[in-house]
Length: 280
Image 1 (spheres, one colour):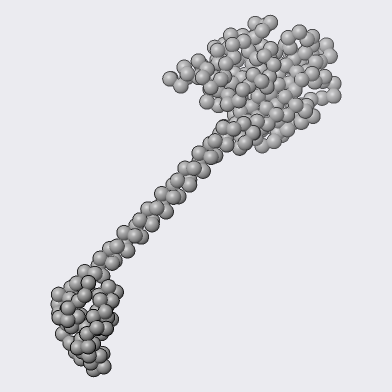
Image 2: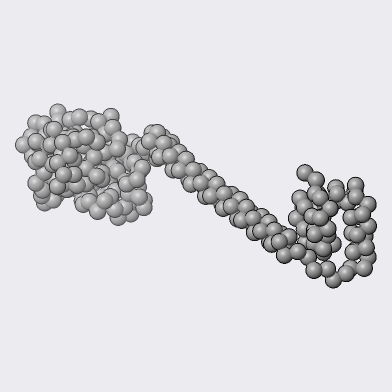
């Protein structure tokens, strides 16, 4: 587009004061390059710098241009900001999905810790246990022996710990005692009492016996108990099954012999007891 002389002469005051838009400047300079008359007027104005009263409509057009430019810049900044916020949200969402995915993968973020060394017993039981084992969901562990002594014949031992969101514990200790020590331990355990437990997690009792020797039961967190070990004389098995939200997040059956579990015990994620409790 070429500007006529009349328009260029109206623009010259703004052009001289550098108050013209880049596009108007380009068109004005193209016109001046080919119009000696307007060029001479421009040079005269530039040298003498006269006090020229420019046209109001031209000034208004310049103001409109500046407003439009600022408006466009504001929209550009808003667009960049929105894109940055969306990007941060997406990154956080992807990160959360990644963490959840890793937690769901056994052995990734949350590992199932298993220890079968009875010499480590004091790490997991009692007031002097390591921090994450010191207060197992506020359950009473006094059924378990305070320590393993040299005169105790440890037949079997395992501690399982898992903490994806909430801590979960599964442990058992099987000990064969001398006849006298066996009677002494029975007396101690009978003093611990047997809490009501039938019905919790579908439990109906224990194999080969009507009741355990001792039992601590919680309708939310599970059980701590001692039983006569099936098929073994003078032998006691101590067990704790502790978890949250009415179920284990691990396949507990693969970590403990079935004969150590109460009959009917079901702490899987879809167990009937959990469904009942969640409706209450």
